[in-house]
Each structure stands twice: as structure tokens, then as C-alpha cells.
Length: 329
Image (cartoon, rainbow, N blue to C red; front, top):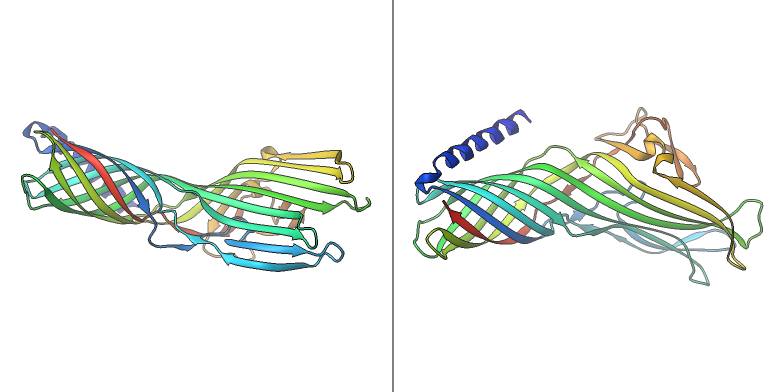
């Protein structure tokens, strides 16, 4: 972390030096937007107790036995999405420049887990869980630019590092479940619907980036540029927090649809362990892990402390195209 802060400080000093010398025409600003595609797909992390699988089950209403109809591993990357950036650059000479870019990235939504259970013979859904996730991130990308110095169409290569400044993996989950009510006839069922949102905070990291592009002058101080950029930014989770939670259980007479009773759990009803998670590299007997469930509530060894779970890894890098303008000052 100390090295990263020193690098960041040095680049800011260089950027400030470039601003001080703006009157010489060596300083420039770029604004760009682009879209990136994932190139290094991997298996998504678990969503709580649910693995990254698309599972279809059927349940026998008489015995309660469950049969797996199909199962598929869910893979992908959070590197696909839209990106916008503002760049401050300084030309050392006509062949070499230093750039520092602040980027905002919004990934597309990814299906992270899905589990649907139907009743044998009727096809009615007895239970379902489905989660989608996306990443928002802000990073600083210092890079060195080398070009042949042509007057018109001027190709260049750019390479450097990526230092994430802020980012979150947002996960949204919807779940339903129908279950029998103890002591009640079979036509009385408990129907539970859950909606939750959670945010995963990443650990500090550093990535790499490189680009191949070209600039073309539109005026004395205005250029247009188009480039292909590759980024590799692996990220591991640090902690997770549930930010929204709504759970409603209706006890229903299925013969006429009458709601007999209703129970509700909100965000403030969750225990500390249900709401907060600290990621670790190893789980052992001292870790705060689940001990069982009571309805939709998960019980932990210590409900009043953050839960522990294994670190997960994602990649927010990819291959994309950027289009923008450069203003030479």
C-alpha cells in the first residue's frame, strides 16, 4: 500500500508540473467513452449459501424427495460494461507523453445464481432463488504514451497500471418459498417472498492496462482519437453488507386464497452476522460460521458479530474500444 501511495503522489506531482507548463502547449486534456467486453471469464463467487449454479429441481409432494433435473455452472466476468474517462496528459516531446486518467466503470448485470424447484406432476413453483450482480468502480490509470510524431494520422501505444480508488459489487436477490405449516391441514401453506441487496467492498489491488490507437487533428488544438484497450484488474472481496432486506411470509388458505396471517422481517431485524460479513482466506473452528436456520433466519456461532466467509475473486478488466477528443492547451 505504501508503494502504491508513493506512486500515486509522484504522478500527481507530475500532473501538477504539466499544468504549470500549460502555456508551452505541452499539456492536454482528453475525454473519452467506450465499451469493454470480458475476455477472461471465470466462475462467479457464491451468493451467501448459494453456489454459482443454474439448478432446476423437482420435489415429490407426497414424500418431499427432491430430484435434480439440470445443473449448469455460471461463469462470466465483470469486465464487460461502459466506461468513461477524463485524462490529464503532458508531452515530454513529440514522441513521448505521460497520462493520468480517472475512469468510471459500470458493468453489465450478471446472473450469479438461480435455483428453481417445481412440484412433480403440476409444474407449480415450490421455491426459487435468483441473484444478479454488477460492479461500479472509479480508478486512476497512469500510463506512458509513445508515438512516431506524425502530423496527421498519428498512431500510438499506451501502457501502464490501474489503481482502483473506489468500487463495489452490488448483488440483488429475489427468493420465494412455499412450505407446509405444522399443525395445519395440507391446504394451508406458508408463502415467503424475500428481496435483498448487498454490497461487497474490495481489498486494495493494482492492475495493468495497455492500448493501441491513433489520433487525428480536427483543428489547431483539437484532435479526435480511437483506441483499443486491454485491462487486467483482479479484485478480491474484503467485506460485505446487506443494505436492503424485505421478507414477507403469508400463511394462506390455498383453496380460496385467503391470507390467514402475515409476518415481516426488515433490515433492522437482521442479526449483525446476517447483515455483515468479513472475508477470510481460511475458515476454521474459530470462524463465525452458520450453525443452522430458523425459517428464513440464519443462525451463527455468534449472531452479534460479523460472519466469516471465504474470499472471492472477480476481474473487472476486459478488452474494449474508446472514442474521444483531445484538447491541446
